[in-house]
Length: 417
Image (tube, rainbow, N blue to C red):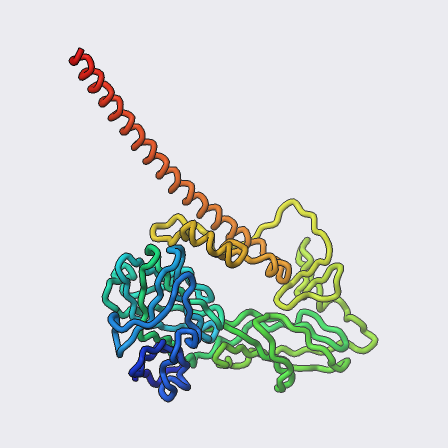
């Protein structure tokens, strides 16, 4: 029986029996104690073949007696797909033995729910051979249910093999986020106080903030930097602090306190000086603004229920998809694109109509994604142009040879007269 111990998270393909049995995936809590195989491929959880038939193998084995295999049915994007349950936002290391049968071509890409669709793999996947070899793949999750794909780009009937798979969380996070800074009260009434602060930082990312009122927990928020405290008493002074948390529930030290005195009951919405300020010709407001609606969604400063007319909108971007033209970019094949469209109904990395209907779009991000697709289309066109030029050159050479042969035939006919 193969097992791994002292793992925060562990998924393994184990082999243990005197009969042919398919491998099973287990979490750390049961990997060491449970029977490590099931009696049919259909019972294997979290791993399946897509476009291929799956089974067990007894001759291509790295550890134990059996390995897991997928044999191509149609030769187009056939793959073995693993869908473990992990924790979003953490670093993981997968170890897996891989091998290619005759004519097979194994590849590791188009992963979902991780930071890179083509993950870092050591050694290079190009070294895969007919003998099982251990590969190490590092990735960071962006979803709790990532999709890890092992493709076979070979012809119909070719086979790829997996054995002794494990996924381990890299290092339990014990580092607390930095202390939130610049906590301010941007406006208040007799019963409310609007708080804002600068984002904290963390090695794995901030997930939540806690708001404390006079030393007592007022609210636990998501990853936002504004909050309106309600239900306050008029003409009363309160002290507020903020702390930050990450996915491992590490909590920062509290921020510097901000003191807020609510307006008197007759003051209504306040004097106004606590909300608006003026410097030269610029009037500024530190709170949220709602136009045509009564609320601003969490994480946003402005909400408008209606049309906006302007000459120009500028969206600041940290990245831009010039990476498409860099050497080594993993351009999906047209067959892969066709497969994705058939399964999902939309292009890879582009939100579906349902997602847009639910969440809307972010202009900067959507422009980036659309340009990525345009640049990928440009690469497809250039490839097609190169192929067309090669075919044209080959045709010219063939026509030249035909003309030479025609002259030789004509000379032979002339000599026989």
